[in-house]
Length: 413
Image (cartoon, rainbow, N blue to C red; front, side, top):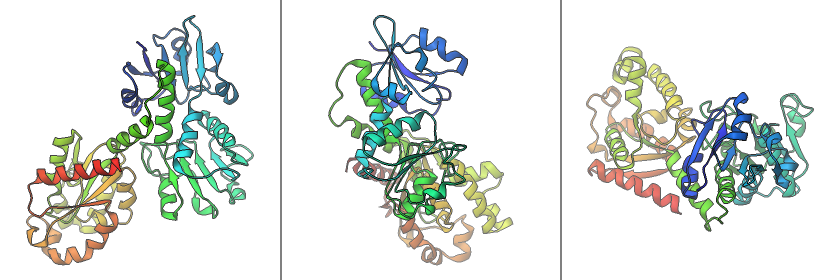
C-alpha cells in the first residue's frame, strides 16, 4: 500500500489529508519540516509518494533522479514518487491543477494580457499553464523586479489577474495584494488561496462584477493527479467536482443572522449537534473578550461602543472555517461586517413573525421597540442573506435540519 503525505514548513491548516481521504485507500500524513531537515527526509523518509508545498517546491529539485517534462520546464516539484530502484521521480501537478481551474471557471485567457502576482514556486507553474493556454503577454509582478507593485499602474490594461502570493491567506484574512480599481479592463481574477473562500482580492472582484475563482479547484485537481501517480490507478469520473463541493460545504461557516429573539442561538446549537461543527455565539464571545455582556456594554457605553467591539470579535471568529456562528440581531447595521461574514461563510437569515419575538433582556428591543427595529433592519437582513429559513414557532431542531438540508441541496446543484 502507498504511504503518502505532504511536506512543508507550516501545515496545521492543510486540507490535503481530507482531500486524499476521498481519493484512495492509503495513509496520508503531514510532514512538517524545517529547511535543514528537508534533504534527509526526501532521501530517507518512509514514504512511497509525497506532495510538496511552500516553501520547498524548488528546494527538493536537486534531489530528484528523474523529472517529468513539466517539472523540468518549470523548475518546480510538488509531487515526488519513490521509485523501485530507490530513486526519486519529481513531477509538477500544479500546472495540471491550475489549467483545470481556468477551464472550470469559464474565463477565457487566450490572447489576453495577464498579470501574475508573485514570483515564488507557485507562480512558475501558473505562468507555464497560462502560456500553454495561449494567454499573453504574461507578466510577473514581484516586489523588487522590473515590474513591481510600485509601477503596476503601467499594466492597468491587464485583462486577467492571478494572485500567486500568500497575501490575504488565513490567518491574515482581509488584505489584497492590489487594488482592482486600477484595472478598468479586467475580465477575470484567479486567487490560488482557498482559505478564506473569498479573499480580499476576490471580494473586490465580486463588488466590481468581475468573475473570479479561488484556489480550491486547483488544490483538488492537482491532488487528483497526484493520487493517480501515487496509486497507478485512474481517478473516478467527476471526482474533482465531487470533492470540491464536499470541501466547500464543510469549510464554509454557517452564520445565522436575524432579529433579536428569532432563535439563532438555540438553532446554532442544534446545527452543531447534527453536524459536529463547533458552535460559537457572538454575544458570548464578546463577553469572553470584555468581561461584560452586550446588554451591559450598551447600557454603560452606548450602542456604538458595542458595535465596534462586535466587529472586532467578528474579525477573529469569521476568519476561521467550518463553524456554526450565531450573531447578534444588529450585526447587519455596520456595512463593514458584511465582508467579514461573507468571506468564508454561508449566511442564513432566520425569519420569525414579529409577534413571536421577545424583548426580554434586550435593551435595544425595549428602547426602540421590536417593530421599529425590524423596519430599520429588514432590508439589511435581505441584503446580507444567502438563504432564508422560516422559524414560525417550530422546534429549533426542525429549523436546524431544514438549514442543513438547504445547504446540501445548494451543494448538489
